[in-house]
Length: 270
Image (cartoon, rainbow, N blue to C red; front, side, top):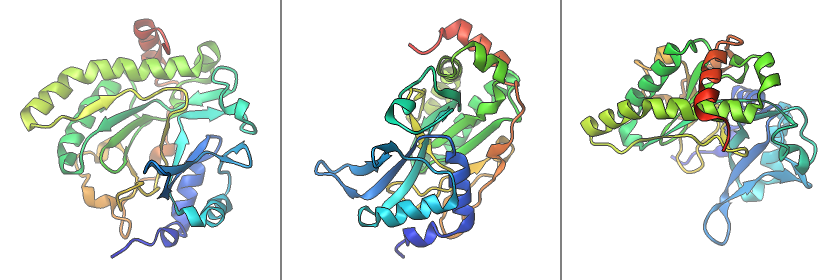
């Protein structure tokens, strides 16, 4: 049965989750229509202004305004901005970024989903061993998994002293290095070639909660570390998804010690 994308995005919970996650972030939208080189069209601007979402009607507007291009997937930057009015605003990586969401990309395949969870557990354990517990959430993104720390787990005081780009890049790189031993062992035992990647460059976007995947008919669902044992790939079905709204949960400052340790070891964004 063919998925009706417009009908899916009419669900109020879907629009609410997307908008609340994307608020104050620079938004990107992948469309089903493709460019001449075969890549899906990616929307980043509307009338020369960076694309943003601040209310539910904004999702409706994008779906309607670009209906011929068939919008399908919503993304948002790791960056949370002070303001997003012009191109210069979103490219001001040191003066206009209020905070950032530390994020790891576990690059995998759908058929390896159970092994992907094992790697996620190893990564989460490193975070927990470094004092980060309440602020962690995971998103099944389609073929793999994103592990995130809520951006508010880093205190405002620390953000004021060290640029968010340096802090978050260092955290992700530090933990990525730490998890490599477990990653290699799991891949060797399972016969997989899953990667854990640091994609925390200044413009990086990640799939918004409850967005559809750009190719697969699956939903980007959120779950917490205590659900890792129970997660099943069936949770991602658009007709009957299972999703946690607890990506909003955090404990301010619980990532500060990890951030300082990472800055000392990594030194910031290269």
